[in-house]
Image (cartoon, rainbow, N blue to C red):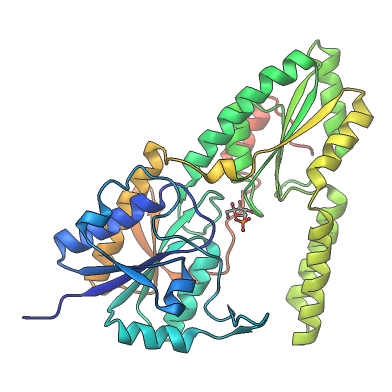
Length: 376
Ligand code: F6P
């Protein structure tokens, strides 16, 4: 009798709704349909390096579909720069390979976002059989129409914007609400449109505060002396956007490792300066319009709690398809969602790429059609 396939699964990067649905989707299909054995590494890459895991059977997978977060825990550790406990890092790939052998594994399943795709690719390049399942509330992973977590986060943020409207309206205030999304505007654009934000600011469209202020003043002149401004955490005004574009240019054209380090440090300094930019937006709008402004940072509320139906469905679909890929011996791929179907995409086409909102995307046109200001 041939040996049962034994698979290690982990969740890495920021948590998001739908992770447990994907673990369950993969696990149930792998165990019941393909007779595989499954172990779950604790806390992402950390558990893989430290070889801390639990056996996962149908019992452990029962009842987790609707749970938020991840039953396995997560971390943002990297395989090639793992903390050495003394403030430095080391390449943990040899240790991971050793654990893979020791645990008698045949495959690894990484569930995570862009950073996790890069870690998966590093291990594939080192000769390990890995597949990746795309999760993130940011929806910024290339070649997948969407990722689990996004739909739930968009629903939560939409409800928050709805609620902010009535308080903005009652007090005749500007409410500036900051949403997550990393360097992409998907979450803010989607929730901003669905929640009817008056102005939506996203990283892909650098904004002018003067234009935003004019827009708010026009609303006030037409009897609406209140506005809700949805700002993506990665949005910048035109001046900072130019500085960042120049810094990115320096990073990509650096002639030596030292020059690259310096260019990256310069870029980090610009980004650090921008950390409180949502408060600056509120202050500037208050000064320019004469209306009182308040700030709400939605933060981690956006990725906590139970997944919605769409994310449960997507996690189950992609998880199950991941198990089929492992059974077929298809590795080095991310299982993407494309036109409603689960489709394997080579990891080299995914890792290191950010899916930003195209300027001609229909959502942008839809926002403009209904008169939403985009700060440009
Ligand atoms: O990638 C998901 C995300 O929630 C981003 O939207 C946000 O920029 C980041 O994670 C926050 O990271 P952390 O959990 O490390 O604070």
